[in-house]
Image 1 (tube, protein in one colour):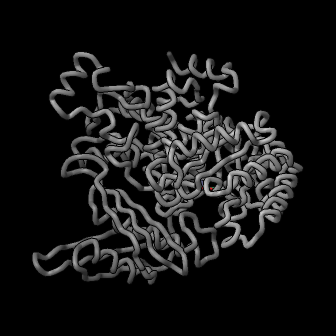
Image 2 (cartoon, helix red, strand yellow):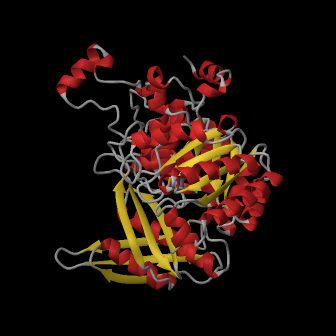
Image 3 (cartoon, helix red, strand yellow):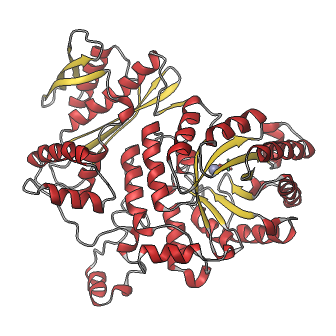
Length: 529
Ligand code: KIV
Ligand code: ZN
């Protein structure tokens, strides 16, 4: 079945057989360490999620910060297709901010959350059951005045007394919520408990038949996807999830796993989603490139090994009959059988075709730029892989180019005796070029110290990683670095065939964010500690 036909079937599917995919990559996913994104990066991801076919896109938490507000608003303005949702605590100011941020959306939703479990009531909110109930009702009513589409989440629902949960949810439906979300905030439940609870909620909550019941499972025990599927089996018709399962602590349920489980085992679940599954891999790769975090090789659906057959017996079986060892078609999730590798003799057409199959639509001007950089890269390395192309197209985070720029660098390692490095840095304000040298334990250490000296920004590093983007000794390396600065975590990333240069680029990106912070500019890609 081709994509168009599949979407048409989904459109006409009765609501009870249709599971809505609520993506929270840009909210629950983005708020976890290592996955922060700048506004242009979030916008890019949001467009990709819309293309993927998510029904609801949770774009952020507008009251959390000015940057969050701006990105929710920009996504609401720019992205068409999904309902654009913003998160709000059960407080008037949060709800008002959320309503303002989502107002440009063609279809918007306010997502109000309030903790209901005894642990949260006593130790976090310091409120009685009645106070929680009252606060929730007021918040949902207020949200409903501002927006037709209101979701209510009972935070830590799983550890809430079921009778109280039933009372709260019925009250929120009466107050105007049209989606009722039952989160396993701490990833504590087992699948049979989720099934039993959702079955009970459908039976006992007044008004539940007229609203959409939703699951939101965290993955602390590795049960996020299994529990989401148990919720669907018990009648949930919205599933909240993230690309590659990113999110708080061990993450949220992985979107691609839920969607492919529902599709591959349609015989069992008897439901459909509106996801264009061939875009699952390109979307996961985009997230990985934007955030600088590698997809584990053995990750289900989108990992490099997900469709690789190494053992002779398996290879033989798959060649004879694919189904012997494959339950899904690689093409269905966007994996191509033949990995066409480009090189320095590849022309513009071949490059454009490859970029297209990776999900990148580039206009002529962008193509000119990408082609020049492709040729330069192909001169340095024999084979240019898809992951190299991702890095080429995405380039540096557009939110932080300058003020410092790397003009020249040099590094030398001495056997048994450390390393030295020198950098020449320019600054956009036109000050004289800054030239510094430094020693270090190794060339990366030395270059980071030289940058620290040249820019006078302390690189208080809390995390530093260099990973190969593809294969072979000439592979590009991606450096990701996090520093602490003035109570914030600031991130920098760089890609180069020279890992010392990649480290220098990452350090400079972090320094540039700090410079912007000092100048009072919004500081994308940082998190408050
Ligand atoms: O995990 C959780 O409870 C949440 C809510 C805000 C929905 O993320
Ligand atoms: Zn969550």
